[in-house]
Length: 250
Image (cartoon, rainbow, N blue to C red; front, side, top):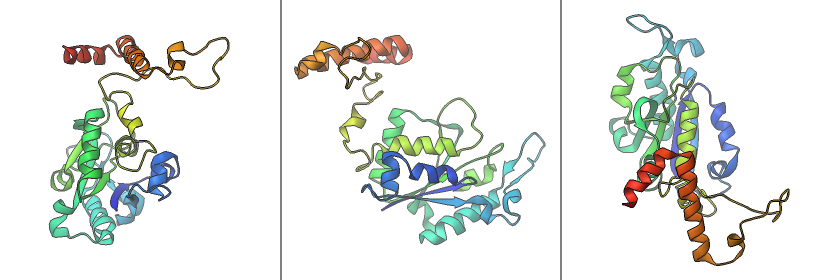
């Protein structure tokens, strides 16, 4: 069983995640995906409760910084001890992740790589640190964090949404999460293009029908039609992806 730990000030974000969608089915054990998610409430490991998790930055400046000692205590007492890990060899047992602007940019390639390395093939369990305020004391990051990821060039109020995005996107590539794994391999970005248009019942909607080729049953022609649609849609809506696709095509 792969175990995922999340150290956070707001575990309710993840309780909602566990209750919804295909990822939630796996995390609740409704569908066998072999992944378990545990949240660790950071303020439980502060001597002053909620108000003791952060401090004013040395050198001055706005905002507050999450304390290294409190995060270490949460890691030791909230993850390592209850998880039965060995403190002396946690680098061999845990892969600890933080999200922030200095991190590797999260895209489909990185997502698949992460899923393969950390959800499918590695024996290590995962720990996510959810930052808040102005960030985390650098000494904790330097000593305990193995990898940093950035989900985009914008600022969130906390790391919970970033961690949720990483979990939701990467779990799609883990065995047993999707009912049909091929659907993940045919989604947008898999071949450098965005997905083709989709249609379902009713056959006529407000006077507009479905492209006849999709009703023909001719699989090779349908595949050609959809590829051409993907190219045109990518060219129209994501010129950056289209340029990269054209380079590869040559």
